[in-house]
Length: 98
Image 1: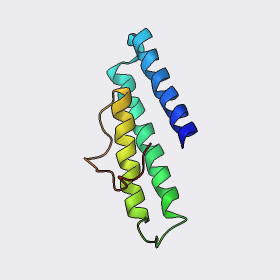
Image 2: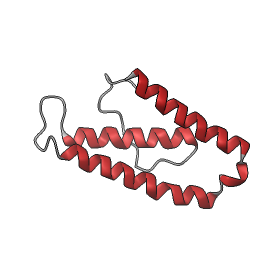
Image 3: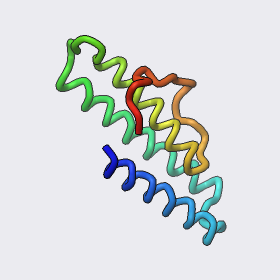
Image 4: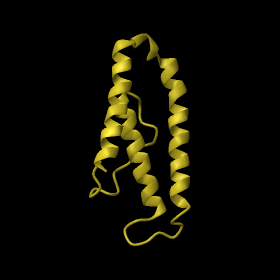
């Protein structure tokens, strides 16, 4: 998990640095074009979560994974300065850290 967090934070830092160095690129139009791509990526990840565990097991099922993915997508949007993609969601897995 630590390597994944490092890669994730690096990507977020790169995006935010590009925004600082090239503010003319971070337009409302660009942000509006980015949101549907991020939304689609999240929906694909949610669909993938439903495949291996249609019935789920104790403490982990597809709906809770869906909520977690929406929570994480909103968090990533916040980290790069975009509005949330999904209505307010809470982390259904508070024991899971990033």
